[in-house]
Length: 287
Ligand code: SAM
Image (cartoon, rainbow, N blue to C red; front, side, top):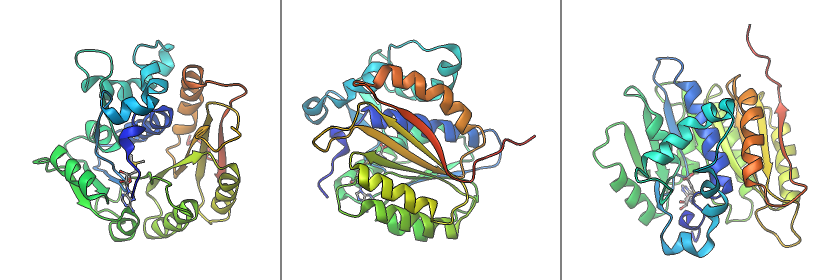
């Protein structure tokens, strides 16, 4: 386990992933009924952007660094507000020195009836996460394999909520593991919302992944692709992807507003594109 998210926290991929996460949570909060968030690869929760690790890559400067003082039109600003408010709450002095990872963002948006299960396998990271949430009875931190947790913790007793799957993609076959894990999880809890992050780096692997999802039998899958530059000759993170199973009916429309606004700020090379595509079961809004 060599992957350390501290080098990448707040980069463009984190921004897109975390904005999607906040939109999903905002939707879940529309009903009073309690929900649970299960974060299967949680990281440490709070990142110091002045650390040696963050400084070494400087990735956050091409991500959250471009957003903090940017202005957006009213519609995009309203949709980005929960995300930016969570980031600003860690930086009361202005600017951005601290960045919230997925469990901290999720926790920020929970109401008193909601719960968070944060799972992290790396012993040091799990220990830091336990310290971060010490004494918080709404959050349970577990040092566990997130893939196993997908089997053991579904469905949650609330029967409402979201599973975030955000593996490090440091091992061969991670795409295949995601599809297998998702199909198994979906069988145990077909009505849950699942959000899976993936890198757009190895294009062949992405094409095979999307094909496998189309053939998975899962009935509602929205795929988000967000590239910041055209394909590089050497493998590098040219874009970020996210697959959402059972997305709220509001999500696609919201992303039609959010993604172009983010793309304007985050794209560095042309042509770079963003897209939304139903891999299964285009959603018809109710009414
Ligand atoms: N979700 C976090 C966020 O958005 O702030 C970032 C997570 S980072 C991309 C992936 C994390 O997964 C790392 O902290 C790594 O230690 C952890 N990890 C790797 N393999 C794991 C496994 N099998 N189960 C749970 N966590 C794992």
